[in-house]
Amino acid sequence: MRDPESGPVIPGTGGVRKLRWAAPGRGKRGGYRVIYYVRRAYGVIWMLTMYPKNVAENIPAHVLRQIAKEVEDV
Image 1 (spheres, rainbow, N blue to C red):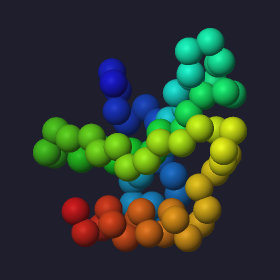
Image 2 (image 1 turned 90 degrees about the horizontal axis):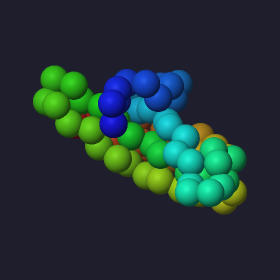
Image 3 (image 1 turned 90 degrees about the vertical axis):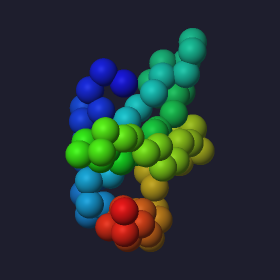
């Protein structure tokens, strides 16, 4: 990942970011959503989840709240 902070921050998650990843031959619409967290001070990127966009366009609010809670504990 050239610039780990290029994905937009998901509001209310404490800095968790999302990124669209194109599936080969399918473009961004048929691709994946990657949810990740960057901890630049430690030089690490945590991939939290990845799912096909045709399964879910967005993560439900209760899942985002849980992710934010987990990130706070790191």
